[in-house]
Length: 277
Image (cartoon, rainbow, N blue to C red):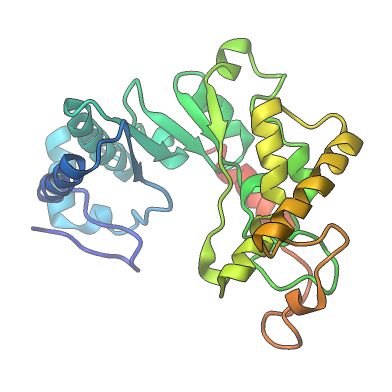
């Protein structure tokens, strides 16, 4: 089987690898009865593909001139296999951009709102934008906020999120299946830290996904205060609304925040990649 890792972030999209992954998926589907399988497809390092003889030969066979076409071909091949088992594939929005989708593919759009709108013109979409649904980012700019990957993404930012923006045409709004928050755990050393990052922002996102953008912030705040008592009773180590407890700040070591968050530079990056053709 010809395959190669590039920094652990990419694998050869050749026919033997597709066959191997189809075998893996078949074994999984024999055990797990599911209508959906997420194939990923995000953050794939394709820089070395054109120089790989096996990949170049397969690209020539299909008449592809761009490695992105091979990325789409790879995902479609796996998606077509899933379809034979009555399963819909789910991909991150890179798969949509490279053409790695089938008509019934669900696109999880994380790189901004623009690519989500484009995907919703033709596919069902799950809204997962970096801003404001990546909860591995800071919750505030307070100096005592424990260190994370950037931010902030505040409780108010999440409450203001509109999964199906009113400016979208109705046919695109109807394509929005829901949403999801993400906490990537490279900077999360413990379950308590995970609790801190998830809550109460998860409460705000639940409100948004059930009821739409939060219009009555005061009413939401009153309901949230009651819900925090439930989290207390369950032992959830959430972030208090006024700021972290002393034991949640990370002390004076590496988990104390150092320097301002990276929200503006990250937003600019998201805006640039979301417009990729």
